[in-house]
Amino acid sequence: MKNNRIAVMASGKGTNLRVILQAIEQGTCPATVACVICNKEDAAALSIARQAGVPHVFFLNPKDYDNRKDFDEACAKVIQEAGCHWVVLAGYMRILSAEFIQNFPNRIVNIHPSLLPAFIGADAVGAALEHGVKVTGCTVHLVNEDLDGGPILAQTSVEVFDDDNWHTLHQRIQVEEHRLFPETIARLLTTDFTIDGRCIIW
Ligand code: GRF
Image (cartoon, rainbow, N blue to C red; front, top):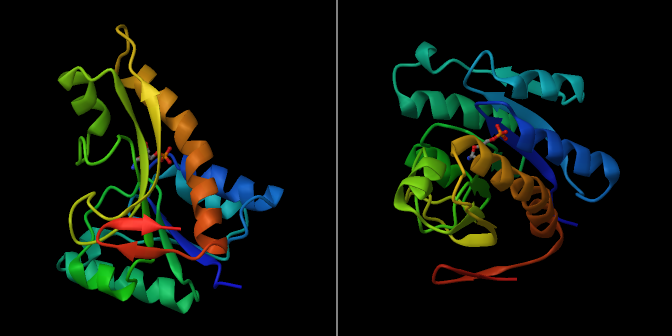
């Protein structure tokens, strides 16, 4: 049995955190969310975590630290003290320092709202609309030091409609995210994989 304790880092409304907690509750994802860290005080993810009874829930304010490295070090400490093996980024809107990533090699998982490698960066939905693609989607990937560039664990496509705006498209992408993310975390915790170049072989 793999170590199934995960820490979730989030900055926003926390719908991905919510579905992960629901999947655990329903028995379809054999994880334990032992720690949730938010870098925004008003992030809904904080109340979702508290309501669900996550034992270690923290708002850490980046402004209280001199630099990114120190802030990330504080996050890593909290995660390690909570005994977490995996770090799940669920709408975490900060770039992680190399030092943080090296603390959890191939154990940090992110969800990104596009079919990577298309549209890396903070506004993948806007970039897809602007580019005029007819298909976009979401990607769950391991995090390395390249922005949105780690090995891909799973992807799902979403059609772009002519009358889509940012919200309608993001909403349909999130429907897929909410299925794909807990499913992929479950797979990570139950299935061994190797990494060949940048390809995940389950
Ligand atoms: C998602 O669209 C995810 O792909 C991106 O940030 C968003 C987070 O949504 N990285 P939520 O806070 O989980 O609702």
